[in-house]
Image (cartoon, rainbow, N blue to C red; front, side, top):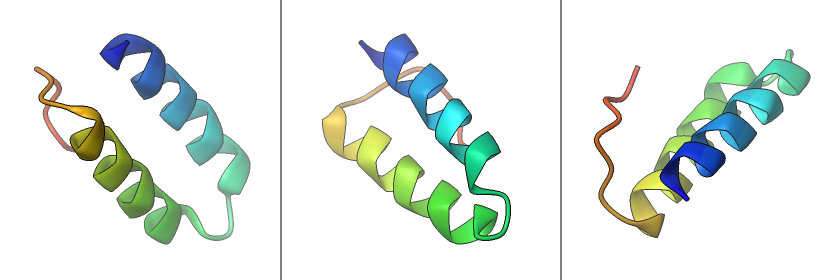
Amino acid sequence: MARFTTVLGLQVRERAGHDLDRLATAIDLVIRTLGPTSIEPH
């Protein structure tokens, strides 16, 4: 689940382009909300 969420997040980040930082922050918050993972924030 965590891996799928991360892959989905990366795909969305690549499509965002113009609003990358804000979107990346939102995605990171969603990933943290879904539960603990071994993925370090970038």
